[in-house]
Length: 461
Image 1 (cartoon, rainbow, N blue to C red):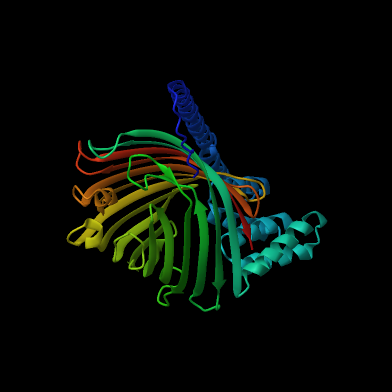
Image 2: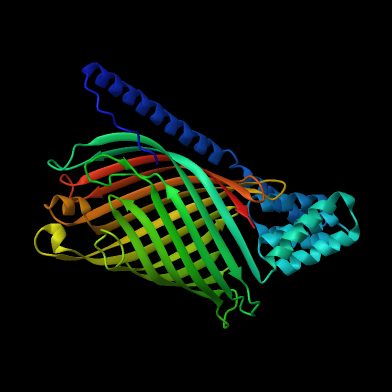
């Protein structure tokens, strides 16, 4: 994000004008963030009657199970609420009653493609093409081309993202360190992220995944620990090689991933994180509605600059559960630890070896707001997390006084919407709140940040 420049002004009246402009700008920013939040609330609750429409359509399906119009209405409501299994079984019934319904076959093929059943999708596309319905020819040919690409043993996609965000940040610090601040900033964001998938077509659906990406941001952080948010160009990059293997004793319900990865992140103030590591995940599905995973990771940080860290590890568990048509809940908890040494030259005396650790937990609720006629979807997600840990206080390290390892508590709440504007493009917008407290109550620092963000991603495949 781009920080506003600072000019030294000598005259008091100019300073007063500048202060007034800052106050007006802050007020306008607060109103803009509030208006953005109201828009998201209205957008989130407007389609709330979709579940009741689904219930009525489901009851009608049970009553008039042989009526094509009733079945078609139920399929529409099932797709709009994310009940793809119900929609698929109903369309199979429609086609059983009328094998010549090319429109039903096209819809069924789209659903099978969406859930990854490419062979079944291709079968219905070919059956529909054989029926020779001119009005569906273009849609069927386009879907067939997408299925053929998805069935290739090697496939790839590239995501290009651009956007920006507005942040209002308030910070308070203990006496003697820095004065409290209240700032607002606007900045941009760009990312290129890609994946190559190799599918050897094994019985256990094994995959080899190659991921890589790079991003550039203008974050708004206190990099020099003087109490003021600073804008700097932050580059970040990542790469990973993953073997994803379905375990043969429980195909499609038990899966293990092993990943080798490398990450880079500029942190500002002459610091960066350079991590090489390995992580593993075991996931299983005890039911159609439930997914559970266990994961662990280890990263070596020895080449990082001014991070004063040697390595870190984490272990965690998470779950996803479909609680109702169009509603999915996620939760996780993880424990992590970092070790390192602050050199004697930095402290002007004896080197300081340390170990920090903590626990983080979070939950998210995702709602399928709407499915458009062509299959595009609109989702909203409300997520919250809390972390209680210890950290190396780089401000205290630089000042050479105070405890170098301090306790920290972090709250984060985010509300995001994702709208598929086309088969390749999606728009994401949302608001967020971040609260961080370092040190004991009454004597530690506190930071609160409110964010509004907007990003657009286009996928090349």
